[in-house]
Image (cartoon, rainbow, N blue to C red):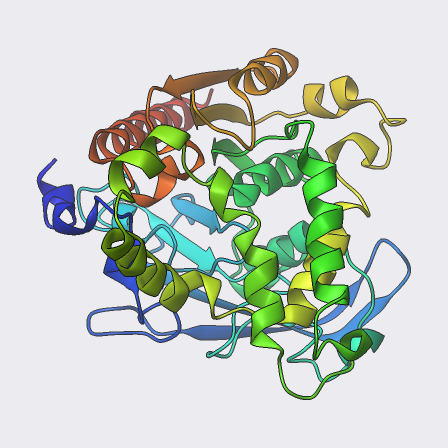
Length: 373
């Protein structure tokens, strides 16, 4: 509780107010931004990234046994800072106990800082090879095993689509981690997911300045319009009505959200990321004949799904169905008007609940590992 108290002044409008202007650079007391040079990445669709770079920061210390490492996966349009409020001594990802790796995904979409290889920063523009979610997880696997020399993780924690990717990682590399914690993430999106995806890329394609993706100057308005389609689903209707109840409140929220999320995206990188969702997900992982039941049933890691009852991206009934398919999985539903964004401090009670649940789960993993279970 104490570890979270200093963040509470900015909880009412979410972590946006805490991180505005900070997500694109590192500030005092932050660990250094690092870059792993990982060489060739062969993609599932046949393409090759010849010089894969993965950007990341680490918190805490890797122990001698190298068995206390946790990988954090950010969500769509995010970066490696998006769980910082849960990282530190005594927090959910306790740096006195664990070595936390926070990376930027392959194809990272934010501008303003050097990050993992993407269509734009590679210089290839629309000649960049197509990638999918499994390719993104292969890059994460390479970062941890080849870049950092760690053969097995204690856990993978992911938020939003990063939570969904944690499931793919557990399917693709079942011996790679002891546990996964998808927060507001899952393999079963709501029925409107495909419609929203098609709409987002059509917004970019029809935007002035897009030039079929071969622009030299990022059409920021196109990227902002794309990412804005997601925003209404971030919170529940009750949250919007409670917190954004005046023009002034909206303006404060919009300025803060723009600085760390809405207005710092690259249109081309978002376009590729959106396409990646359609080019391979858990159910069509090779070896499972298109069966979601078989793919999820192959997961060996313990799993804790943390989600809000009011999540409009991934409905609670979908999470419940997924949990039934995964051995050693359980879920923690949280009653919170923050909805999908319980992971970023939009509701102080949800923040505490998420923190306690992750702490308990990691403690159980640590005990089980020590006992050889």
